[in-house]
Length: 80
Image 1 (spheres, helix red, strand yellow):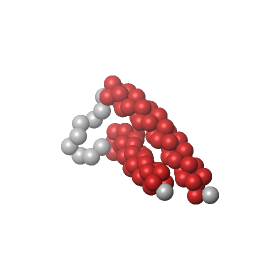
Image 2: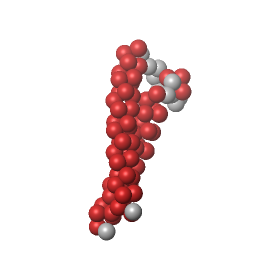
Image 3: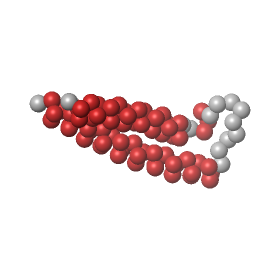
Image 4: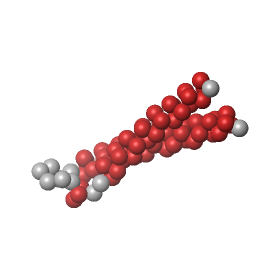
């Protein structure tokens, strides 16, 4: 029972991390024209840096989703 509670907490923590990563990725992929008023336009270099950061966040998000699925599988096995 203690292991199941630990897995549920870990699943919740991973879900929170996934949510944060998805929001960050969405913000990074936003078109420069959609930037809120008062902010400067992006240069080509800044755009490249954002693309690289978005790729890193996408990799992290993918790893988190695999981790989440592994936790769900372990929980499912425990419940049977």
